[in-house]
Amino acid sequence: MASQKNTTTARALGMASMGAGIAGSYAGYLLQRVFLGEAKGKIKLKSTHVRAARRMADEMQALRGPAMKLGQMLSLQTGVLPDEVLAELATLQMEAPGMHPSLVRVQIKASLGREPEEIFKQFTSEPFAAASLGQVHHAVTREGQRVVVKIQYPDIRRAIENDFILFRTFSKPAQSSGHIPKSAIDEIEEQIIAETDYLREADNIEFLAGRLAPLSFVKVPNVFRAYSSDKVLTMSLMTGRHLEDFLAQRPSQKLRNQLGANLFELFQLQVYKIEALHADPHWGNYLFNDDAGISLVDFGCVKYLSPEAAAYLRSVCLYPGSTDSADFRRLLETYYKQAGEKLLPGARRALIDFAETFYRKVYPPHPDRNQLFDFSDAAFLRDFLSASKSLFRTKGVITEFIFTARAEMGLYQTLHRLKAHVPTSQIVKKCL
Amino acid sequence: MTSALSLFQTKGFDSTTTKAIARKAGIAEGTVFNYFRTKEDIALHFFEQEVDQAIASVRENPRLRKAPLEEKLFALVQAQLEFLAPYEKFIGAAFIHALKPASPLGIFSHRAQELRHRYVGFVQELLDESLPKNQHTPLSFLAPEVFWIYYLGALLFWLHDSSPDKQHTLAFLDRSLSIGVSFLKQGKR
Image (cartoon, rainbow over all chains, first blue to last red; front, side, top):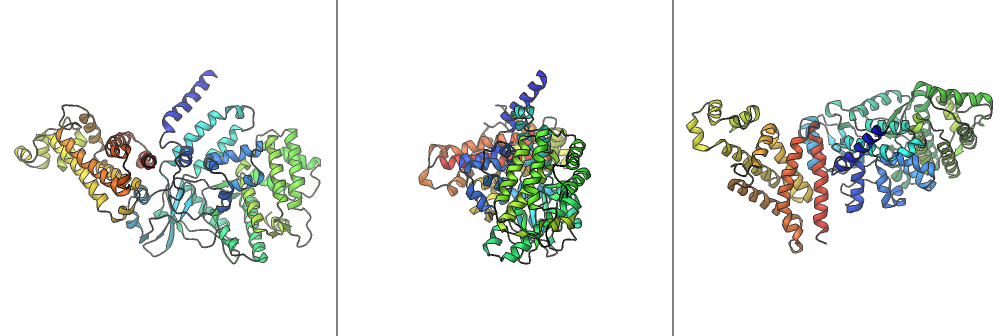
């Protein structure tokens, strides 16, 4: 035990003195920006989270790394952040340092073997958007197709791994008490590290493009494999407006309702039918069109559910009987057992309470014809957050649902901003 | 020159003789001496080319003229490293030689000093372009000399970097230059 402790401490110290130096830490970069007051607009980014940014103190910058995802969990549990900020946190993006054109050129050449101007007919050296862990440039292929090229910041994977080594060491007490289960840290690290492999992202795009084909209102980009690698991803250009711009056009209630219903169906179909979902609810990852069409643009974070998890979700959603029944309790217990987690009495109560205070209201099991749920009232968001907090406090969170829960919170936040009225249960019934 | 570099890379700098260089180039050993007195001269000529070409690549790139200082400095170091990349093994050996006081390749030798002056002078030019002259501070007067030492450190980092496509070095250069330029600018306030 002692030697294990020493090894971990030594690793952390080694990391602190060497790895976390100039380039070895993602959090280090974020802190550098805060302390050196580096120009935030090093690259001219279209701010897709203006509102969120406005609400957050500058110090919160440090949460925009992998720590952000851990921070969400911690703050849910401790209640240190106001609910509104918590909800906004779900839609923030992990930022990477901006790259100047000379670094972009080197990164493309290292990855694809040629200079951008040799690969593309046109390549815009200034980025037009930030992407998770990198930035995005416009380009035109030799065949004349307009594409976007996502380029990863060098060595970001190692920086993230280093941060996790440090976090694991410092969070030992919380791990021992069971408040931050080791499995949860593993899940978060695994998912974030997966985001650093753009070839995996290309696979995600092609997988979801096939499965989402039945939804005519969803558009997914084409991948250009010949111009892609693990650090560079070339995709077709998608059209549409980000949420802020979409709302600025003052869309009609009818359009907002339709878009809300489409977003809702997109989420439910992924969870219940596809059993995999686009799990990064950052607003920059969705583009909205005037015909209520949705273009998806970033597939780094796709969560694949186990068949058991998907079956469990299908069985509890729209559960027709009483949530206080032995049958419902059995459903919960069976799944927790399958997932290898212990369902403590407190957590069971929290789950039943969650089903009663939130899901029954938002997803009535016996809806009237054309019954709509009004997402404009913030009360439902407060109910969701308060029930989530109880579940965290009672240690009832299943590791597999960490990303699904974040995506769900992001969905509700977007529906709330749209002030959409959505036939929730009818849509879910279609997807079951 | 190409034959010499190829031998330095494959056989090692110390084991390569001028005779072997002449044989590889298909010329008489005497002809080699017409251009270079020793193999160290050949190596120095190579490093002069490295610096001159890197300076030219930054000077002749119209886009870089308006680029921020950290990008210009990054482009300079990156051009040097790209020039050196095919001969990485030899650079390691040359680095050790450069630390020996009596070596003609040594950092205090006459020709190496000339090369350093040329390099430092160019860095000074880049600083002057980016930072207004009337705001000079002791920090900015020292900066070009400090940059030379920084470059040697970056070269050592690059030599030890076994990451694919030298990703560690790219991140190190970008982040350290960004911090360095920030400090330089803050010192001028």
